[in-house]
Amino acid sequence: DVDLKNAIIAYEPVWAIGTGKVATTADISKVHSYIKNLVKEIYDVKVPVLYGGSVKPSNSKEILALEEVDGVLIGGASLKPEDYSAIALSR
Image (spheres, rainbow, N blue to C red):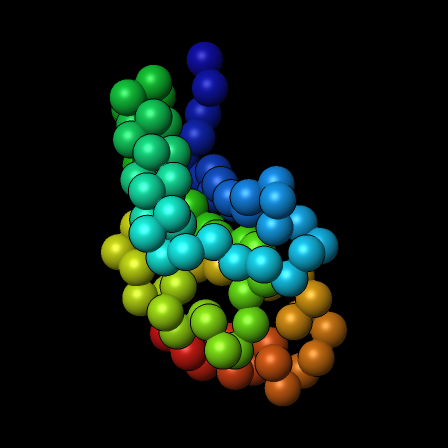
């Protein structure tokens, strides 16, 4: 038996890791919906899904505005306090 009531899933496209590239909002929505539906179907649990993949102040508001996105996983931008703060305040 798997207990996912406190689980959080973070999704980052493999091709985005360390590249500075970000998925389109359409792709992010599609994959997040897929993940949420799959987890709900298999485990009958709703889990939050975070997006990671070159999240920065210039794109965080658009990503966080997506209905399927429950938050972001901040990588390199977390090393710059001003960028981290701007992302945190962008929702």
